[in-house]
Length: 164
Ligand SMILES: [Cu+2]
Image (cartoon, rainbow, N blue to C red):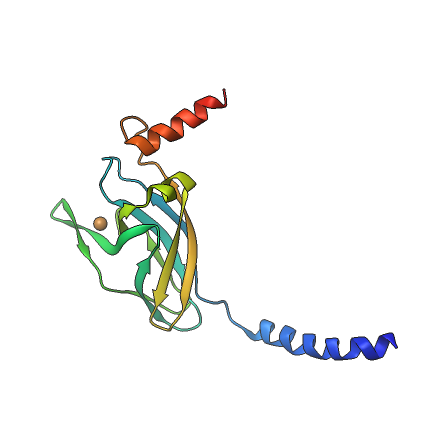
């Protein structure tokens, strides 16, 4: 009796295991984080690494319910003067790595929802030209200045002090 019950289950598991072995590494995003603007209300910056899948694709857009607007930018050093320009899309080569990092490509994140700031992380949705839609949680880091940073930072500090 037991054998006849288990037999159909085994038949289902075997093909799944085979196809998992044959799959190459998929497109994925890691090392995502957000740095708040040290100047209080200015836009925050977002950084992450895109790891290319078996085929090349393009990152088209990053969105979040936690912010009003997100743009992709690239910092450029022109004769020693740093500036940045908006970029429409970013090529992600097959099996390649594309880094959004300080001093280079980055997200500019405008008007983060205060509830998201409190939660300490923001969920980003990344749309690619191959139809992939990746959802990534990015921890939010303060901009490196702990004082005079607006009420969100202050309320965070006071709740910490309650613990003492
Ligand atoms: Cu920018």
